[in-house]
Amino acid sequence: MNVDVAVVPAAGRGTRMSPATRVVPKALLPLVDRPALQWVLEEAVAAGARQLIVVVSPGVDDLIFSHFEGMGGLDRIAGLKDVEITWVVQPEPLGLGDAVLRARDAVGGRPFHCLLGDNIMPPGAGCLAAMAAASDGRSVMALRRMTPAETSSYGIASLGDWLADDVVEIEGAVEKPGPDAAPSDLGFLGRYTFTPDVFEHLAGLDPGFGGEIQLTDAIRALAVAGACLGKVVGSAPLDVGNPPSYIEATTILGLAHPPTAERYRAFVASLLDRP
Image: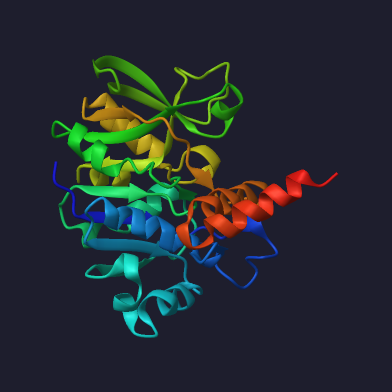
């Protein structure tokens, strides 16, 4: 499947990162030398996306727009040259599914990648191109093995037939079921390659878990229709949505990022050597 458009829901309020996000949007919190959202957009571009559709909240859209479109525009950002960003506002925080649905007109009937704005894949662990290659015309969800505790924090897939060692048909999905109700140990990690029929399922949803329109419910509908595959990947994303994991993500990226790696590695080693 050829995919040249990506949707990035980045409209979260960032309440878990307060007070840092009282004024600065969560998407603009810096990780090493660039905002979190920029890492995500560059991942999409590396996988072949040339149109990026970013869903933002009202009141912060101007700040995010200014970072990417101001001061010479995207041509001044090395990882985002020769791409177009379409900005879409989600008026109310009605859930991830609602945020994706807001991008429907901009997607325009094409298959698209969807990347969660507060999950960053570790360097070298991007999976979008492999997901597109795994498609046989169906949507493909990135899956990874979850610990029992993690099943309370992620959507979990119900599995059908395995088509390859790392590709499986998805028959259903449950939002944050917990270890006792989880249908498998494979959970969704925030990277999706959707066919446009996902919008029909999203448009017909009632509020689900947490009173929000859940993307997991649309995935379940795709699965019931036999239109959903899972691609198992080995790497967990870096969650930059809460302070402890944000610090961990900064360290991992700082140690891997060429301009900072050598000095930062020496600094971390010096800390570990202290009594």
